[in-house]
Length: 340
Image 1 (cartoon, rainbow, N blue to C red):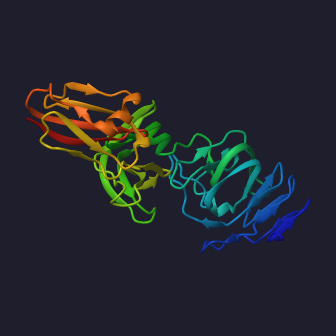
Image 2 (image 1 turned 180 degrees about the horizontal axis):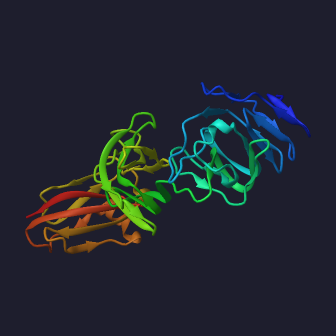
Image 3 (image 1 turned 45 degrees about the horizontal axis):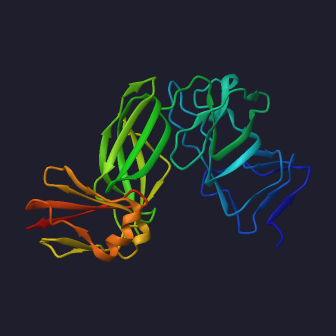
């Protein structure tokens, strides 16, 4: 199938934006751009070093500036619907009326790599004040948003990392910031489909900081297999004291689970039998008493025997115990057991 557009060594210039809906859309066939060619879409120039095709991309141009201090960005912000890896030169044509208090000679290209992530201000941009045009080179940048800001401007929160992983029966979220100004708190949000988001907690922010800060939050009740497909999506809503906010990139945690876990007899006297739908997903089994002290722990070579014969518990004192089954992905499933 032929590409939607194919450009050679030429400059293609489309009109300046009217700040409405998406100004550009590339369909399934994609927009093919020849390496070293320059393509301009509503004032945004893209000159890849090598051939590149943008499939199913839309580009929106808005006059809402990126928050910053002491100045916000210019009133021209380009946003693709999703990021793509880019090596080449990016440029922005702007109107003098869009400078928004920035000193034109001090402008730098600013880019974001994912939905809601902080923008990064580049170094070494070239400004042509006679044409009101700025450009810079990028190497292997995940590109989603593009604008321009005055050099030395500070973005409210610079999020340098955000991860999510399974820890026991919870989802552990961890993130770090390298700079914060006027930040109030982080709202942790969860979704099952990426469309409907619900707040599940808050963590106070540093407020004013020029050093690395580390944060963590545990979701004690993630959705598991049986309730849904087991995929939990998380994002951070980074809220400033003036109630402006931005979203982090989305992180996913898959709780595959061990379906149909059961133990019997319960109460147990001589041994306890454990049933698991798929023993290949089991890493180990251990038993702890009511005080949390381990009284039994299996090794991988014992699992076949446990699945067939159970675990001897005759020697254990009468009382309450917890049988914990750890899956290969680190999840731990806990079942109560009474020993008579």
